[in-house]
Structure formats: structure tokens, C-alpha cells
Amino acid sequence: MAVCINSAALDGIDALIIHIETKISPGVQYFIVGLPDESVRESLVRVESAITAAELNMPRQKIIISMAPAGIRKQGALFDLPIALSILAESGQIDAGLLDGLVSVGELSLNGKLRPVNGVLSMALQAKKSGFGRMIVPMENASEAALVDGLDVFGLPDLRSVFEFLSGHESCQPVKNDAGNLSGTGQDKFSVDFSDIKGQAEMKRAMEIAAAGGHNLLMIGPPGSGKTMIARRLPTILPPLTLQECLEITRLYSISGKLEGNALATSRPFRAPHHTASDIALVGGGMNAQPGEISLAHNGVLFLDELPEFERKVLEVLRQPLEERSITVSRASFNNTYPAGFLFVAAMNPCPCGFYRNAHRKCSCTKTMISKYIRRLSGPLLDRIDLHVNVSPVKYTDLGITENEGSSAEVRERVIAARAIQTERAGSVVNAQMTPEHTKLHCGLGALEQELLIQAMEKHKLSARSYDRILKVSRTIADLDGAVDISLVHLSEAIAYRCFDGDYFNL
Image (cartoon, rainbow, N blue to C red; front, side):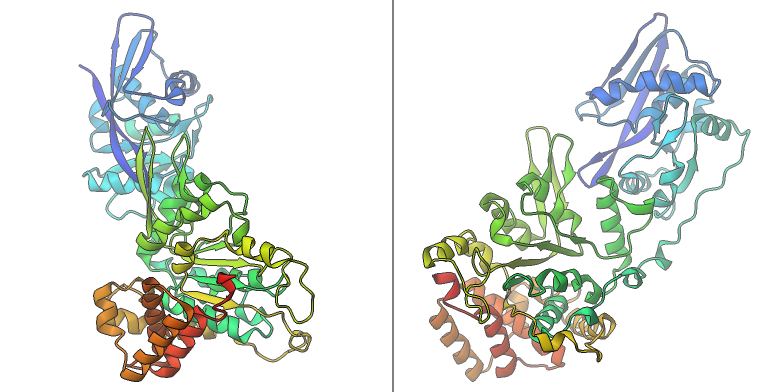
């Protein structure tokens, strides 16, 4: 009778349980069936060497290993440990009953050491969901897997230690990781602060509004005006992460092999891909499916500098995740959906040379060159950006300012207060994500405000989506003021952010 042991494999951001059955019979060949890729087929070479290095017996017989479900392609070296354990159990070196209720993952080196693997948190969550009570992982992955409550996680260094533990010759205590005490601590780790920014009061105000309501933002200004510097300080004024948000980020970074320290992620991510990035790098996919930059920015900030320099097809793939806060990557061999709830911030020069309408430097671009440069950005993409902000060069007099410019902590308190109002009003939905029902209910305008908005729509030829965005930004500005109703002041500021230079995008 074949021995069956349980492992796990990644399926997008989630995981699924893999059942590994092993049968030993007379013969001299090794077989692995169940759609294994090349790295899985190679595992028997590593397993054989690791079993020998652990001073255990590798059967010199016919070994058939079946991996179920058979219709799902198995990838990676994470099955080395469960395959080794199934061979040891089938050959009678380990009591097969000890493997009941156990999930194991881990790559084996030739000398029997356990190497860490990606995506352990997702696998641990699936193991708990499927009713398993124990999990064996490489020592480096133990703290990550232990984030799952109700699952006993054992982190071990090598195959020999796993054998001794399962045989009862060595005791091992489950790893503990109190995730609740770790979430919300990442705000203290930032090496930059809002107080570093000199002057730029208008830009800092726009950043505060973007953080308070979750609004996307586009900065337009000449080189050296501080666009990138300001954008990199946006995470410092966002509210602390909740435990659920920490776990979501940790899963994504674990799957991608980018998790630092293999523990809970406690800081909001800031992703700034270069303008030469491909559409696959941005949305995810590839031969071995991986989350892209927009998913790695989940619950954080995605910053695209030199926005018009990105390829048009790369920018257009942003349209779906900006609306739906998720991205579905479909290929012939897989169909994965990754979360993509990021705050989108972009920066661009006003023209190819960067000095169009600059009071201190003469622009060397023709009107045709400027128009062609601007038209690299499509109308539908611009419609999805709530705030369009003109960034002026920093004044020389502002550079020498030494008094307090307002720290990140001070701005963050105002942002948290505005978010609290939104939570009380619509639950976890921030203003930028309000449904039409929420917008109708919470963004009502008086007669004067409605007349002003209609005039702005007609003058600047704005779309219906722009109308909706202006209402939501107005609601955020009112929340920052602690106001119940949207006033002319709030609405005027929102319109100015949307139409600071109505003729610019129509050259």
C-alpha cells in the first residue's frame, strides 16, 4: 500500500494542498508523475543525496511518486522534503502514522540541509483552512509560517533533524510569532520625513489630501522641483497598517521572494519601477507566475516617475487595477488574480526639455513637440487620476528655512482623523473608492456648489468620471476640515486640483 504525505503549492497568491503518494516495488527506476516541471523531476537527485547525507537508507528499488491533483502543474524545489519523507515512510524508516495531519515543504541541499522557499505564509494559511494541525518548514521560514494562529509550525535545519523529530528522538517546540504586537510598528522605520521638504506648501497640501482620501495624484513640474523627493515621503503620512493589511503584504512579498527577514511586513511598500519596465513586470505573470509591481505596491504607493517615458501599452494596463484594485493575469497555463490596491502617484515634466512655462528657464520645445509629448498619456488614464498638481521650482529663499516645516507625524495625525470620519461613514471604504450610492449619499451639493461645478465642467470639457472624482476629492477636503457638508471652498480647491491648467492637456 502506498504512503501518502501532504504538501502545498502556490496558486497565484493562494495555495493548495498537494498529496504525494509513494510506492516502492522491485525494480531500479525512479518515476514522478502528476505534471511535474523540470525542477520537480530533478528533486529525486537531491533527495537521494540528502537521504544518504542524513545517514538514512535510500531504497535501490523502483520508486513511483504520484503528485495529486494530477491536473495541476507542480513547480519548484519545495517538494523535496515531503518526497524524502514519503520515501522514508514507505521504506519503513519512519512510521507513516506520524505523518497524519502534517504538511511539509522545503528544498533539500545535497548534504541534507533545508533551504527556505517562497510563499510559506500562503501555504500555512491553506494548511490551517484544510484542517491540518502541524507544519514542518525550513528554519528560515518558521517565523513567517507561525503568523497563522492555530497551526503548530516546526522550523528545522536539515533532513536528519526532521527524522529525529518525527521519530521522537528529539523534542521540538512550535515556533511562536505574535503578529498582533508587530502590526502598526512600521511607521517608526522611515528614514525620511515630511519636514525635509522646504517650501512647496501647495504640493504638500495635495499629498495630504491624497493620503487622507486614497486619491491618485499626478505631479507636473520642471526637473529639480522636488517631485520624486515629495513622492518618497508619502508613505510616512499614511495611516499605520492593520494586521490584515500586514498579512496581505507579507503574502505577496513571500511569493515573490522579496520578504525581508521572513517575518511580518509592517511598513507600507513604496514601489518605483523604472520607465523601461515591461507590462509583464508591472502587472505580473511570466513563465513562473509572479506578482508584478502594481501588486507589490498593494496597501502602499506605486510611483511612476517620468510618466510619458513609459510605453503606452504599459500605462494602459493600469486602467483596470486603478478601478478594480486587483489584476487578473491570464495565460495559456494559468489564470491568477493578484490584489492591487495601491495609491498611484506619478510625476512628469511639462515638456521634453522640462521647462515649458518656466519663469526662469526658456523652453526649447516647439508646440508640436509638447503636444506629442503630452499625448503619450491617454485621456482614460488621466481621467482615473484624481489630483493634477502643478509643481513649481523651489524658491531659493525657502531652501534656507530652518523652522519646523511640519513633520510626517503631524500630517499623519490629520490624515488618520480624516480616515476615521470616512470609516464611521462608510466602513473600510475610503473616499476615492466610494460607490455611486456612497457618492450620492455623502457628496451632496448645495445650489451654489452645483452651479460652480457645472460651470467648471463646461469650461474645461471634463468627463462624467471627472465629475465623480471632483466630488470625492471635495468630500476628502471637507473631512480634513471636519465639516459635515461640502462648501464652496472645498469644491473650489477640488476643481483647482483637477483643472489647474485646463489648456495644458488640450494643446
